[in-house]
Image 1: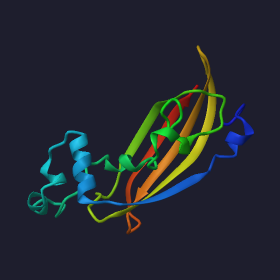
Image 2: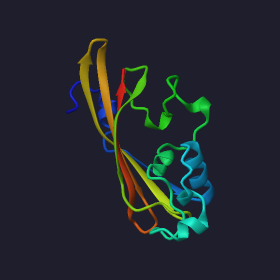
Image 3: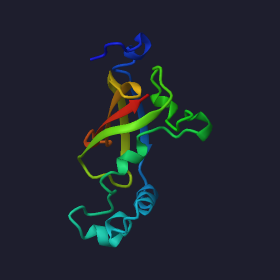
Image 4: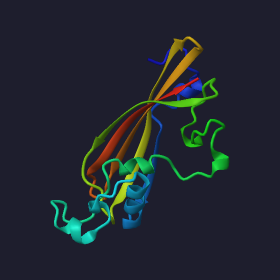
Length: 159
């Protein structure tokens, strides 16, 4: 439902951005360190070879680190949101709303991830503080074999 949504914002529904990332052992190790997960599956080649994975793999939500393009802080909106997801709405703030994440094939060093981020819906509700806009994105991460590594559906609340 896109009632009372500015035409310029409605026109963005269906817009997709695509980025490609090469995954390295260093990326996986740093992500595991950042989330404070010492599992040797994420950094110890000898240990990982003996598991069902046969080598190092990334933590399950690793793909989330590639959700947004690298952007200088000076390009972020005043509320800290990335400018690439800016939708022309009469708002000043973006907040995370809801997110669901499906995990597919394990991500490994050497994988080439294609990240497709698509604006799938915008809808409006009226809250106690006034209008709230809900902006829904779907992001799919696939590896070089075309296999889904992960998929996220995220709703951002804007006011």
